[in-house]
Image (tube, rainbow, N blue to C red; front, top):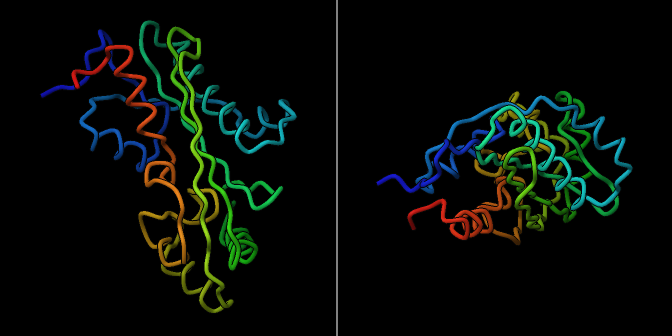
Length: 202
């Protein structure tokens, strides 16, 4: 049974395999599109420092960028920031940067701020942020190198150099927060919005 009731296709402004999996597992039919925005440039120009606000800003900009070219559609944008205290992390550029990030995160707790925004005709009609607290176990240099060898290039595709749904699970000793937040899409608030707008059959 098709759950989506919208007159036009639902669009996910992301190529994230985790986000696509979450929407698909929830029974939603959707299309994907790439949001062509300069994330770091937008972040710098905003002069925001709050991880929560930065995640919201970038999720919204992604949704609006795709929505501007798809009139009448509902477009989902998402973004995730990682904060260790006051320090913000971005996706590592390569193995050396991934190793440096993991050295700093090991033995400490950090926060993932996962934001979702929905745009319709170029305007944000919904947004939400959920937070997960992640405690990484203390690790030796040899253990970090072994993880990086096993994970390969995947470490450069996620902030913090890990993917919890994969080998990244081995880095952690405690996790506080829901699965959807950790994977980068606050799914329950999003589904609640779609139901309120009568865009779903359940």
